[in-house]
Length: 468
Image 1 (spheres, rainbow, N blue to C red):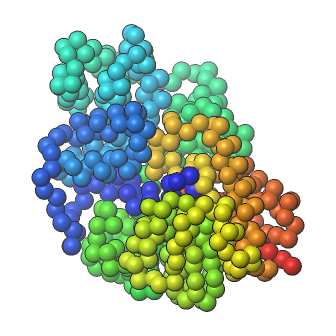
Image 2: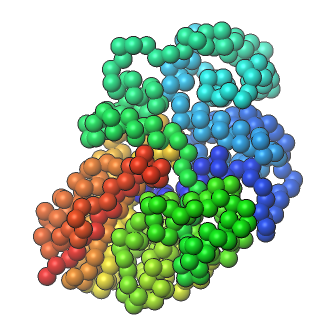
Image 3: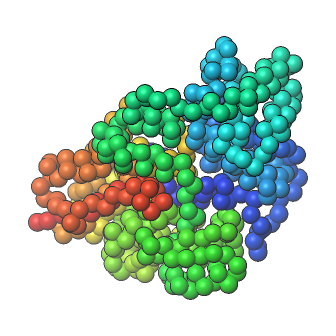
């Protein structure tokens, strides 16, 4: 997982195009006393804060949608504009720069964001007339700036409309440039993936990163079966079908934000990506065992482990951040799980808290580059640096070296990340095995999932066993 940001936290908000603007469900209260605004005005505010404050797009958008009084259609439009503009940012800038004489970089951030979101609508959306897009952009420019800025915005956007047919990528681009601009990814990322996976797989990966993820939920099998939950959801008018990837997973269409439903409140399910559900399946914890989840917050995988072992045994969920301890406890309480205990500690310090060989199974869901969840956090493409990937590898090595002595002989260690990076995944595990011959692979090969395979998050899961 990306350091400090677990996949489950991303999934609770889901992709906003699927969450926002849905009908209010039973038990869900309508909001009141919200500020007035327009879809494009809200989108502009979100994009400005993402650029200036490096806010996470999925979390910020959901927060701001709660504060503005928009109807379902406008919520959907604002969501589409925010995610689409971020996803296509470097391609938008590539074409926009020809229309801005002094260059995009010299514009005020709000003007740059306004031009970007307007370009996105004109080129990538077909449900809004170009003249309406220009008129609202000019009105927003007048509201926030002066006549000179609104005139410039008007001129740039009208030039884009007149030259729309010429906005195509030129021939003769290198492979890296072509993929980077076609699917709007940074060149360093494309170049890196081509080295690791080849041109065809990299193109598939970049294309998939621009597609919205499914809304997926995990059945709480302590309370009902997956088939029973699917029947319940379908009877309520939702489209629910079993996941083909995860045994407890369900794909839901038309449900909106499933965290706002009474079924969620009653602990019938958790919101989790299908790939993430495979971690607990791989651990395969048995009733009565003692389990350690080293980097557990916000507790989605912890809870899934407890469910798979029938809430019988002892699970220690540890996290370095004290405020996240409550997230784990809240998950357990909502789901009716009593086997989960929490501890605030850096996983590298856990040998000071637990005796060697005291756990039957250990999960290290390691901090990672998080490149498997780009579709949920498209801003990651523009904020992540290549050197970040090397820095996180150091932490992963330290974590593995510190926690492995806590596993009993014959026990299982599962190492997982939400990235496709070889150095953080198979390369990391192989290096660990070279230095710790008492461990061996406990599966034919590690589980690697790419976002284009099942339209789920990119994930890596390795299962190791400690031999005598």
